[in-house]
Length: 317
Image 1 (tube, one colour):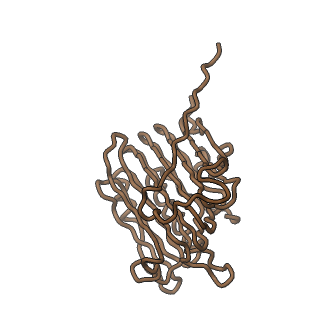
Image 2 (tube, helix red, strand yellow):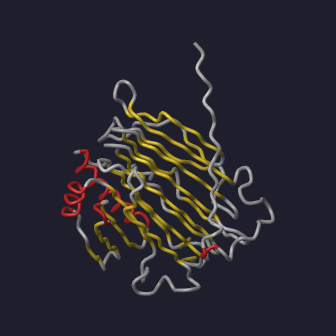
């Protein structure tokens, strides 16, 4: 019996031209136009349980320059969990790049997603680079999304919007790490980008809005070195954990917050509104120590929710 051919859905557009912070950067690039082939990447991944109860990547659609290969099972503490790296064949993000990533974790399934390397944002002369993400978790689903850091070069313009649609019984660990720039390039290139705009918002599957966080860093308006922004720190990590309230309270109580002046590290935690979960932030000077703190916090979340820790990071990571 022949199976019906699956209809390929059109790729949703990625457009931030109406964002006020991007209004200065709408000129068409002279080399390749906005969203040209190879500049409009799209990725759709779907995880679910197979008939034996194993979590697998059942659904995958990708468009250059975004690449995803077969899921791996290398987590020593959770060998049953599929692990996926998002790769890019196009090098750094450049003028006019538009990307969209849709990740769905079905009921009772679980997954770990990261990137193969840091996301580099190249110098831009005309336009900007934009990223839209939709992350959807059904009942009792579990996802760890831990990409490598974002590195903005001089005169970078970058904007992102991440929508987290999470069932009340599901748990998502969503992290972002932002470098101040290419710290050791020539004489240093910290906070010399044009604008960095990052928005994350959470909701329930029925559309109930839970929270929205957006920060815009424009060094021409306010110096990131000011007290209350980055101060003397160079690296910033932002972590969102959406999880049931009882899990959130256990994680909150076990999480240490501190300001380590000697090693120049700081970590803080707060509760998200509407019993949505937790917001965890880290400041540091180098990506390595900040990544280690984020990974340790993820281990605490996994211990609470799944009863298993996160293993030690691979030495080459």
